[in-house]
Image (cartoon, rainbow, N blue to C red; front, side, top):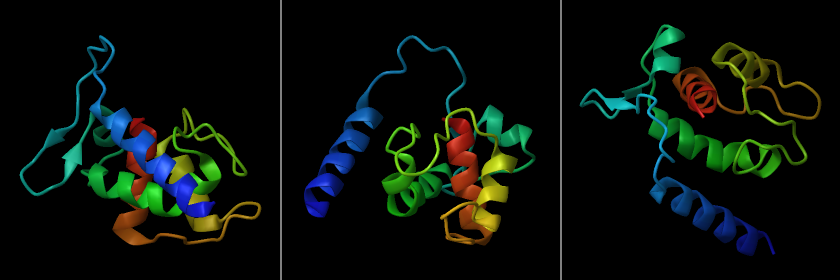
Length: 117
């Protein structure tokens, strides 16, 4: 059953990445040539983050509790969460969430990716 759910999540993630921006004229992520991307939201937080790494880490470590679209499942909804809020939660591990599930630059990348969604 877990394999099926993981496969379904992967399919949804791939299909979601293939969609258009729905007429959204917001600036899209910019690649600086070092596989690190920045967005308006990430830049507002004062850094350049690897959003592709953040997305991958979210899928591996967070989506099972927070959902594929950040809508929440056994963990809370993360939609409209700021980089700082997510980063603090990753460090502290509120509720049943383990502290420091990801650390360092990886935690920053996940936080930036979530804030950018």
